Image 1 (tube, rainbow, N blue to C red):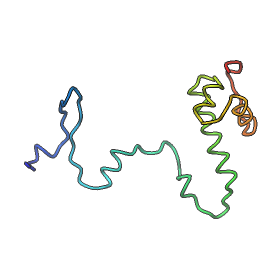
Image 2: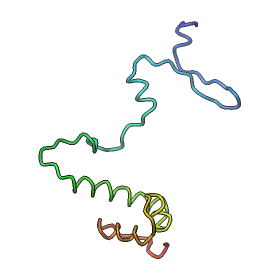
Image 3: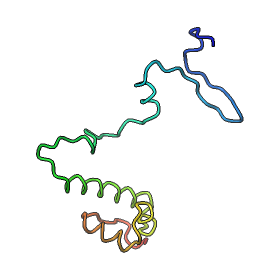
Image 4: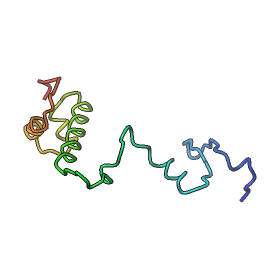
Length: 111
């Protein structure tokens, strides 16, 4: 194995009709950053919040609103499809969840 500097930087290779980048990592942290994308605008992890003044229902509501809204957006407002995306059994159940968490469907009538 040649460890000269020319082999330490990333390079593009073709193998079995697929391009991939070969890169040498210097630490476990480098590998983690390459494999796991950073969280977008999340100040703290849902799982690592301090327990001082912690309210489980608030966290669960926040998570539910986040995924219900994402499902509506991804399905272009179609409640049947959105329900499938979040694992709910029907669009009626999905609609009940929207109501429970105060989310309006701006594209009403698509599901």
